[in-house]
Amino acid sequence: MNNKSKLTLLFGILVVIGGLMTTTSTSTASAQSNYTIKVGKTTDGDFTVSNGASYVGDNFATIYSMTGTATDFIKAKEALISAIVDDFGKSSTIGYIKMNKGENQTNQTNANTTGLANPFVSKEQIDEKVKSVLAYAIDKIEHPVGITLNIGESREVRCEFSNILSEFWCDIPTFSIK
Image 1 (cartoon, helix red, strand yellow):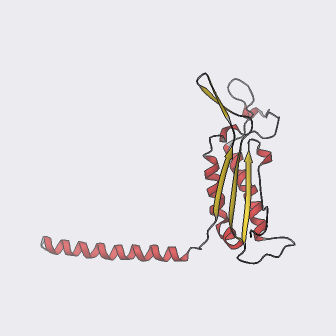
Image 2: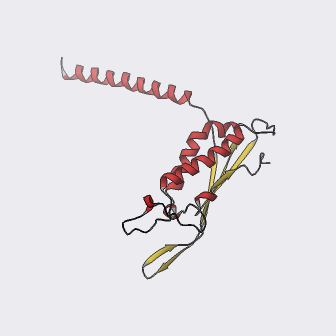
Image 3: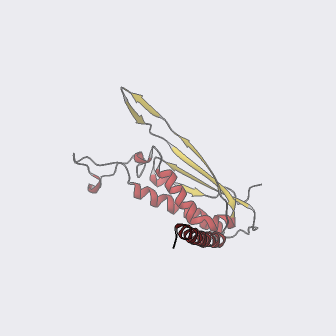
């Protein structure tokens, strides 16, 4: 078999494989649910720079405002929760969140090598709390109690994550945005 025949055969095989890959990706894409949730984020806080070091202030918050239809929230639930957990986890204040206001944790598992209690919660605790409060709000959209909602109306979910883990919350400020 000469080189020209080998190249022609190789090109033919690549075209067939490329066609199969395109068909596979098209089938996968058409099987996915379509949804759109618009997410806005604002952060508030302060820090101090003194003698070459920076210090995070006592109060800070990140607020997420999400809008979409009830159907979109239901379809996007897992992806939305994952995206918010990921985004909030990249916050510069993530390491400064305490469990309760004005209370230091005295749990021995949080003690560092000097024996001092670590007043801050773990990233895993933060992730679980964000997942929990956001799932709660989306579940209220999926299963509204005592409220009849029209399909297609826009909904809003609002979350506030501050420097106190026990005060993290997500809820539905309005059932319909006009």
